[in-house]
Image 1 (spheres, helix red, strand yellow):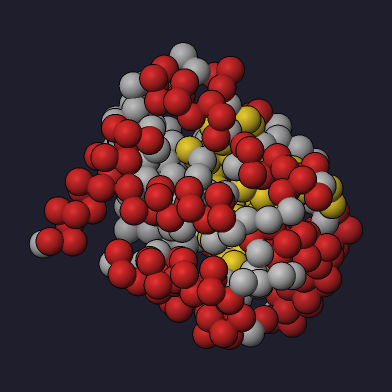
Image 2 (cartoon, rainbow, N blue to C red):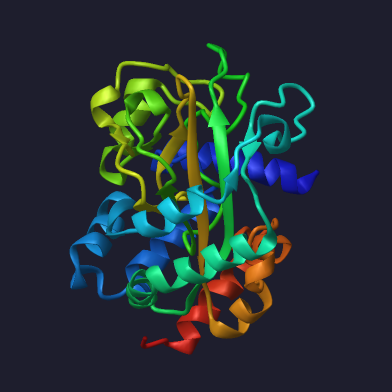
Length: 299
């Protein structure tokens, strides 16, 4: 009960004083992390963009890997449906066999190695891939914000900024394909005002289109964003959209050894990740912050 009260109040205070849809304790953690721990922001254009705007299109393409992967994917509707108690509309890809999945992950890690090296310098600590999800989202009809099927309302993820995401297009994505939409950090106050944002289920659904980045692009394009810092949503495609979502986590090496699964388990929900990326108490949040500062990482 006390946690629920604290969570409610901290979200209200975060929106009131900082114009963010995030708990006040996480907002303060993110502020101090960016001010005192993040380093080498200007080493390249994309990390500078990530720092200032909360997202960046990566200077790398996974076209070759994705193009090869799509030839090995079973696209049978009945096999791909996720058991959803109300709709059964969201689908995940089913691969021909486990070896195809593992081969894709191993090659993807090699492809993204330069990005992870830059992120180690950016976060000033170790960084690794914590989870990967390959899925399809389909069209469904709704005008009610409370009828949210797959995170298609604007929100900020309730994690600390050590948790970030990379989206990889598994198809060419245009405006009609339901691209990810992001409100850049520097435009969040205008967004809050224009949308009269109260929470993810209560805001105006139009009138701020010029404030939004739409993640359209070619097959294999990669976009990294700090999902805890920016308002974002998945829009509804006219037909469907295929994508890969990678969850990246930055932490001291001894913590990553507990959190990061082997390749075979990267496609499963990561139960350990939540413990460190979503601290439930102020004390654990403070301890995690100073654990990184105390190590004084120089990557």
